[in-house]
Length: 401
Image (cartoon, rainbow, N blue to C red; front, top):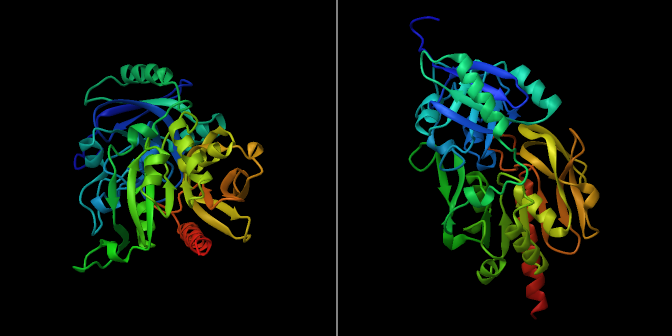
């Protein structure tokens, strides 16, 4: 290696099946365990690793060249890195972008997150695709450490991780207390001529929405605010009674990590709120929780959906949208009650992607329509939620006369 390039300490990624991938440490020294998954997005590595839905997961990025545009505060989807670790083939040695505020490597190190480069991510992805997502571990050493010793330790750690099934992570990553949100969508030329997020004028807010935080991404909240929603974000274990006491026009159930099954508190809240006829919208984990509240069951997927190029068909319009996805569990369509109908399906594997209630103003979607990262094709779901609130408000107004 050229003396002009930095030297990286050794690191090893181990899968529970015994496969070892030696490489270079690109983050903090130490060790981490989690479920190893792959993400096929070509861009948006910072949005990916700061997505709380990746808690307890080691993310493999299939695009080979990562880190070239650095990182910046505006692109973070939460206040910290939530991915348990990061696996890449090539880490860019140079950072070049007018918005960059630092390198990905420094960001990982400061956040005390382990990362590894120099991995054959094509081989790793094939293993995960064929065998399914696996428990794994990254052990990042120091210069001069023995690679074989690192590998043995990594393998022991990988085989000790129990997997994601049964893990309630929503109550771990959620906010500790309720807070208001008024930040709207990003614009290239803000008030001072620089990139910035708009702020919702509270006096012009059209709808009062309570958002459950199971690991919510910031851009989801921004897209709701952009549509005139005055948001109050509440902790995952907030009861339905507390939310209904706020007299909201609508309730939102956010994305988040882990298995939806153990989230009995959220399932109970969703069931009561939907039954009360309050317009309700769920995304990702929120979608699964709403499905469970309806009486359906969820299942663990073989390797899940993680990427920004997933085709999803809207059964109402027949249109196909390219969507961003990040989930390892799904609602089982064979267990759906008669009170709900399927609105969207994945064209990759036919799995369920969207639901709507036949007798209540409620809808939910499995993917991430806020497009961070990813396309904006499915953003119209936010508009549908607003339309549900408008229709319900109009119906209640007529009923009161």
